[in-house]
Amino acid sequence: MIEQNIKVDPYSALRFREFNIFLVVRFILVFSWSMQFIIVEWLVWEITKNPLSLGLIGLMEVVPAVSMALFAGHIVDQKEKRNLLIYCIIAFLFVSFGFYIVTSSGAKETLSNQTTLYLIYLLVFLGGFIRAFFGPTIFSLVALIVPKKTYANAATWSSSIWQMGVVLGPAFAGFSIHWIGVNTSMGVVLAGVILSLLILLFIRRKPILNPKIGENIFTSLKEGVAFVYNSKAILGAITLDMVAVLFGGAIALLPIYATEIIEIPVGMEPSEVFGVLRATPAVGSLITMFIAAYIPITKNAGSKLLIAIFAFGISIITFGLSSLFWISVLSLFIYGLTDGISMVIRQTILQLKTPDHLRGRVASVNSIFVGSSNELGAFESGLTAKLMGTVTAVVFGGTITMLTAVATAFVSPSFRKLDLTEDEKKT
Image (cartoon, rainbow, N blue to C red; front, side, top):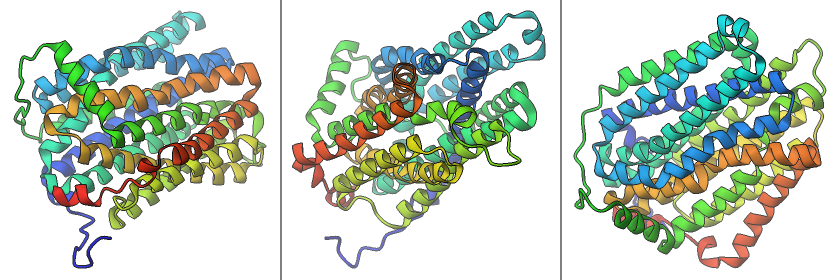
């Protein structure tokens, strides 16, 4: 048990100026990227009315992200992190500008729907390459901004901010599409990327902690993969979350639910329903942030993660079966709450269990398992919706998620009993 005289400081990481700047940058980036992805989803659905086309968006991003992930992790461990993040944001800026041009009124008048669709997929594909570098760079930068004793708290705040951005961005996108249209919404994304770049300049350059600068890339990658494979806590966490996110990607099908399945309340338009559904998980995400900051999640972390993912699966099934607006909203609230808990615990495990010189490579392996599974989950949802029907596909995904949590609890008792309090004390 945790000793009674140990006082938990929920704001320990926030007492460092650069970490607060980092959180602002991360929120803006995640908000903008997530907002952009949802605008693209809506636009593709308007053009094609095909669930598989929605799934292809995720596939276009995940292929380059996965193929470049390990290489990106090696580069991140070899380079200065602040400047590397600047280069990533500049690349993101060019992609966002491309989306702004493609969705402009001039492009709409001159380009056919098919050409527009191909250009959208191309820009998403290019964004996948950039994303391969984003995750490892951001993960590694955190450890250079705060001291080791605050890693767990920093992981909580960083994960919560990510969760807020990944939910609030799509929520705002859902409403902005209705209020100001697709092109102006893309302009908001573009402005957000520029703002994040300017704010990042207030963080100083950081030292490179890798003692093996210039190491052969294959030797470097082998070391990173071997570390993850031999670390039962890290491997278990990212594998479990990967399966949950892969088969729980019902969110990708929200445009279909908003337009064809859920009974639209009187006085609301489908785009407004879509915005509400996208906004609802944000409430759960906000609650997660405050709970995780005040109540340590390092105690019995394994069992808490399993319970969160099991509840996540239940929320997916409930949402899939519902055609009533308010039941769907409640289901998505639980979805956001449990997904946020899972994210915070997993990031805490990664921060506490990963050595400084391996952070880029471990984060890249994590991005292959978990980060990319969001897009693969979108593809899986689109494909199964095409084959099984939308409702059946969502229920199938939620069921697999629940069974994964139960199976992990029985097959891996050591993970179920995972406790991080000793790791936290060592920092």
